[in-house]
Image 1 (cartoon, rainbow, N blue to C red):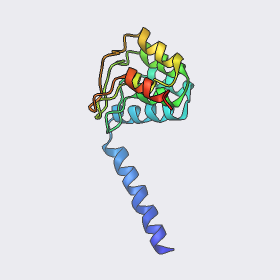
Image 2 (image 1 turned 90 degrees about the vertical axis):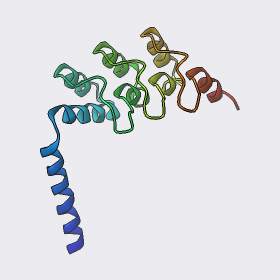
Image 3 (image 1 turned 180 degrees about the horizontal axis):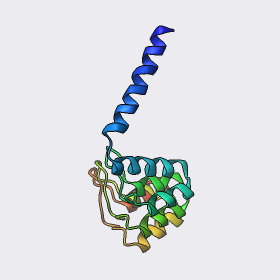
Image 4 (image 1 turned 135 degrees about the vertical axis):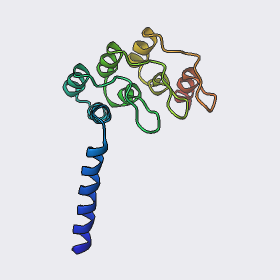
Length: 138
């Protein structure tokens, strides 16, 4: 019981400390990424209208746009692109949002309409076309 209370106290203190040390930009980026993960369009739009950066990233370089390709329909992708998200941003593995969207025709079309680079390759040398072709093979 005492151990559990200590763990909770440490977690609360760490959370408070993070908030004290976090900049407003870091907080808005974290809130934007969480809203995207939850598929909460209203929160995403509000955060973007209030200055959250559409190119927010996770520590591994995964962009808000990449998160949107797996979190919801094309509406979140469109909202981020309309606010200036870079369609060709790469994460630490060299992957792009187009590579992540290859299983969804609507998302893929939207990214291509917004000038996604079809020849971009990941660090492993795979392009979106290679990923799409592999996804449909038996």
